[in-house]
Image 1 (cartoon, rainbow, N blue to C red):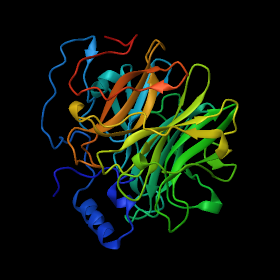
Image 2: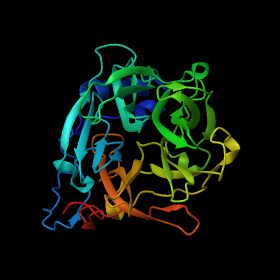
Image 3: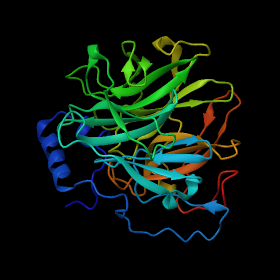
Image 4: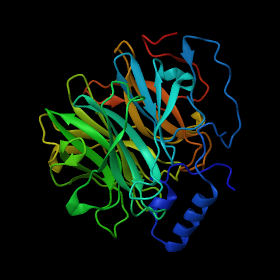
Amino acid sequence: MMKYSIVRYSSSLCSKVTLRAILLLCLALVITTSCKQETEVLTKTTNPPAQADTAAFTNPLLVSGPDPWVIQKNSLYYYTHTLGNRISLYETKAVSQLKDATIKTVWTPPAAGENSQNIWAPELHYLNGKWYLYYTAGASPDLSTQRIFVLENSSANPLEGTWVNKGKIYDAAADYFAIDGTVLDYNGKQYLIWSGHASATDNTQRLYIASMVNPWTLESSRVLISSPNYAWEQVGLPSVNEGPEVLKNNAGEVFVIYSASGCWTDDYALGMLTLKNGGDPLKAADWTKKNTPVFSKKPESSAYGPGHNSFFKSPDGKEDWIIYHANINPGQGCADARNPRMQKFSWNADGTPNFGEPVKIYTKIPKPSGEVK
């Protein structure tokens, strides 16, 4: 048995290679290391210091939590992350105190079928008066069947009510490996952005976008908006762009922050696309990529492979925060050891986000403004 289980395979070594021998090795590891509860200890069994200061918190927020996602509605925050074999939601008024949140498993996959295995990167969105969960899943352990699926819930509280399977969301003319779906709401239209392959034989992960006729059906064909063409996006082969997340500034400018390079490397990092002011999201030429990463590893902070983030506002709406996962130790890869961390970020004079550097773990950080102390 390995020291930790592999709970997310979407950006793992298994999903990035085509050599049959390596794939079979990955599958063997998956079989012998089943998905465990998020309470599993890290490989480095260092306990964080007690948080006696009620005005501050420390990272990591949980001992395990790959691909963290946060959404706020009214006075509550809802959080989720990859568990591999189910989707659970956390409910809290204070993201910094995530360990004390109410937790409920809201969906478990069927025993067989197209969405029965490898449950990755769930995201909760509130669209058109209902809740939607976008998640990645597949029909088999070989990962080639990984696609994006949608669940719908009309309850006011996503931890209540019934989650209805709305099926696979995809471009019928390009139904290939697809993961990490997220939603862009722009000028009255909704778009799905995801990471996928160009063909059935391709294994480079690129970012695509398509407009939606409703939250579970694409309206347009997919459009390629980013390929891993810089060296910092190509660490660990095959090359990777994944985990796209939408960020808007106060002026309404649109950015897509995405994860680049293999998550099995310590150099997993965040890149940024910018949509031209007044641009058309379905025109590739209207997107510009920054030629350097916007957030990357910092060994002195015990932050290896930081990535697959999301964003939220402080309770009083005055501060912007990023939540992301990282490993404490080098070489831990795409496993349970990835843990969620959060920190405040600022904005540059040109309107672009400034995420700074990963804050050192166990360092006291002031809680978000307006958060319950």
